[in-house]
Amino acid sequence: MTDLLVYLPGILAAYAILVVGASSPGPSVALLIGIATSQGRAPAMVATLGIATGSMAINLLTMLGVGLLISQAAWAMTVLRIVGATYLLYLAYGAFRKALDPPTLTSMETQAKSMRRHFVTGFLLQVTNPKAIAFWLSIASIGAVEGATLDVVTLFVLGAFTISFTCHGAWALAMSTRHIRAAYAKGRRWIEAGLGVFFVFAAWKLASSER
Image (cartoon, rainbow, N blue to C red):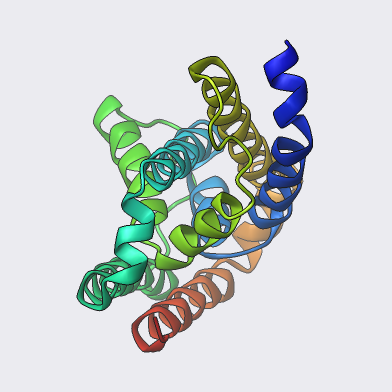
């Protein structure tokens, strides 16, 4: 308990940054809106779990020093930007395809394989986003758990996972309500097209951003 109290101010500061970052609209939120409004709450929450798991993976890698290594290696960051941009373009393609030919809104029935795919989609979107890595590097710069015991580090990682899951899950739940789904059904082409444009813009920003 004494150890935790020593690190508590740094942990709370890191959590405050994380809450703001995880609550802000971005590629992950756009992805959740697309899944929640077209396929329902369960697939969106599975994708949320994938996003939170990806965030936890970056958190762990950052603390192990891998994030710092990537930030110093220009070629590694370039490769990561290209992979992330390519994946965002793939998501944009899916959104534009739905905008041109919207499938029927009866897709609450999802197979186990489909659920796994949603989890992987959320996870890959998060871990291939250089801005997410830069975000966790900024949190790491606070030194919230530097030199802490394993118990404190574990609590910090689990708390960060919970924050990421809760903030992204709030978007998923809000966008899977009946009234919002009904509104989505009316303007689905425009919403899907908007998501596609957003993913293309995000891919361009990732591909063209400086280190």
